[in-house]
Image (tube, rainbow, N blue to C red):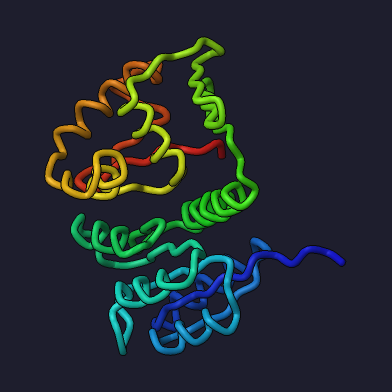
Length: 231
């Protein structure tokens, strides 16, 4: 039996946007189910177990942030927020609530499909327990705690290595300052963003060919950082 294509739950109350997403996703081979309200979205998610959720924040009955938090109580499916709210604080709130990525309207089909591929690939690699991360000249063997650039071993401090592994764990997705501080330095370090700047600078000087124009470790201004994936 042929393997079924991924099922995407589209949560969007605007009919025109739903049509746009329906055409784009079906043309790329995805299956989809649609919801116009938060209530129906949660019911559909429970009944259908989608592989990924595309979620608008401005729903008529409940805010999309609440839907994200509710889904995260029991589902590990990637959540990509699609919203007209482009402010940094809106992105941070969505990501901290449990979203995996955030795309601001209007957006291009190519960008959205690329984000979906990254999210689904990350889920697949997590499920298979992949222990080697590769992008360009950078190779990180998580099992052996080995970092290589152009096949030359790079020595990192324990904190810098931990920061790198947290970014790799969320590869392709933006990780907020708060998330990084919590996972690397502990729950009481959420205000110490200067730590991040210092160690991110160290990582870039060790790993990037041009640290001032990083190819791997990308800044999401005002929000956090992401490590790119091999696309």
